[in-house]
Image (cartoon, rainbow, N blue to C red; front, top):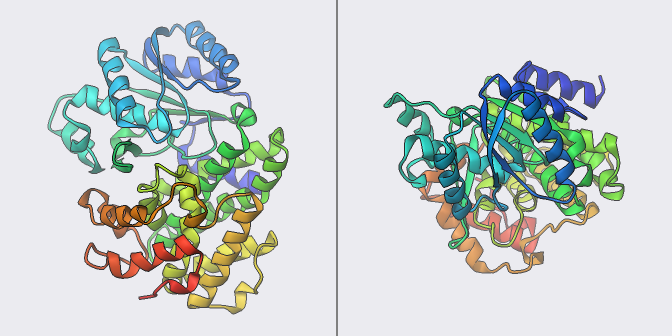
Length: 422
């Protein structure tokens, strides 16, 4: 079975007929939205080439009998709190019966959080953590607004998932809502929309997709969904490793664009099976200097060495994917434990180099030791505790400095030998 066929089958298993995806599917959004409401708040991203797709979307909505109450600009990268406040105010003013978001992960995340705020009230801090939107809904007679989440970037999988990342740009810290209640009612992704995406955005999104697959895979060991996760992650990671370099070389490669769309959708599937951990946790403290996918990509090889003794089976599978693509210098089948982790980490770093992405924090303009201090402090915040709990080697607030500290120092310098194993 080809990677494309396998990916489509897995997404069908994940979402059934509740997901509109493929090349050229955007005109289906209007009739689908009409089944959820007749008066829409349309929140949109503006990017080169977006206007043609927005015309198609508006026409589709109106032809299906959906009135567009108003259009509101989407969120900037990392969904700053100021953009969340603006979108929340717009939703309160419009009182639409269906939300239609057209944008990347930051805009879709902001809409999820904004709807929770406009329906339930309170402050965004009230909902950071796991299950707090659901808990508040259960104590009321209210419901969230149906949300048609139209993805425009092969990246976060925000159109498919229960996550909303919101950033305080003044402190440089991102926090997270994790809640089944905010999963969009109807996800849509026309992979053709990504054809105009610039190389930097393309790489960032694809690397985020790898991070989702990889981190959940590591934490799946010994859990009921381990074998399922191996198929999901293996398919997603292989598609990115195979197709991202050729899309970077030829951005108009339609087959490659679809491959990256399918792969990052599988990343969304992955984070609905389990949770991300180390690299995502650290990335939340690097938002002022790095895009999200690149931050995760820098960190994951170093966390791989730390986790290696606990994740040998999935790690060997990941190693085979990178070896088949020519990035591994050693035979991963003959290695185990830390040695296996080092070999796979080196292969992951070689892949980053191939696509022109930094592989150490010291290479990133604006990086300083303050970022490491911020990341260690954030790891001790109870609102982000789920990331520590999702690690295949569990850490607590008391052990963060001892074990995460060396991982971050290794990521700063590129010296894998600095990492301590438990």
